Image (cartoon, rainbow, N blue to C red; front, side):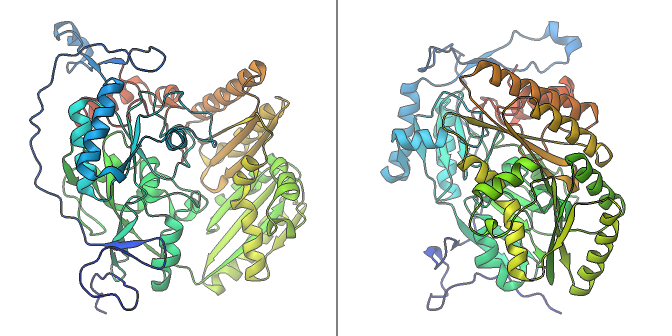
Length: 556
């Protein structure tokens, strides 16, 4: 069979001429493909470093460049060079220059917009500082212009997608300019015969699946927050409930187009499914949280939509019992699409405050596994029977299999709505601390049980939600930030969870990335030498440290 050529699907009545931001009946738009310009050599001369006071709180923003010699020869290296970021006046001049280059509609200084782009209700990993402006590029060329202007003036750039990340990934500890990709929401090219699609970073993954890919029987199998956009998904190496079957975002990104901190544009690779040509630069940018450059195009692999799906919900007497049952399913090699867990606090919350769809079901207020099946109808029937036999041996309180597609949707909606329900119903004056870790499967029940026990001792709302199929789980706690005892208790609980995960040879971040919230934990997990290697990569790509500074690790 011959593969169909690449094509741009157009609504009826639209000319076959190359499309440029033509509006479709859905939020996604099609645009002609981008050809990177010839890389330009930067002619910017590095000036002497001067310590400048920041315009907020009188904080001096300085940092030390890494020495290029090894520790053993550091005594012979020149003294550390200081680097500074622009003053507020310089940042505003940069924003004005961007406005002149891209048009006045491309820049806003609105305080409400700045506040929205500088704070997350999903997380306590926020910074008190705010950017001076938000800019809205519409093309790779626009992003390159923004980067060249900001780089020349030493203005920090902070990429912004949907704002749904939880570790302060888009916070602005050094102020700067936020680059919002909401207008770069076009599909560049769709190759159904090759099972890949090229998109801009502002494309929402749900819209992409429903409005573009579904008609060809294909989908992007990641399943993060439904608000997430592709750029943020790449930046954090997201995953979600489908990771048990399909892996993480890194497994589905073929290549990216990236604007480097000085405005140069690179394309990391072409579209074949495999290549051994040079370094894996694609992998370097996936999960880098925008600290190495701004991704402006992403080529994604696609998966066939399964013939059928199914859902089961299984209640257990305790979190430990549920986690042990999940481990049993994994060890026995059952090929599930997703394996999730919610504790009794979450189930009670859904009964009280869930959506109308979710409240159609009277949920057992105990630890519950949510299981998704996918594949052929015959294969699912076999998997359902096997899962039921295994779980019966684990003494569940009850097992419920969806009998209709509507029931399947309603049952799974409870898992997907959990975080939104918790955030929308939290008491006034409280904040949510949500974080995650991942451990080897054999240690999963142990760490969940210990973390759950410690959280319960705080006397506040604390809940465990897990992507237990791949050893990843989340803890969410609601606390009063003005209550120092509560705040210290939450911090202590989170720190213990991180330490326990590392002791079990796990990771401090399964899918949320590091941001500003887990920088210290990264060193604990990987060691100073490994983090120092990351710093040297950052130094080589971004010697002025203007790309999303303050995230993942600090300069010194």
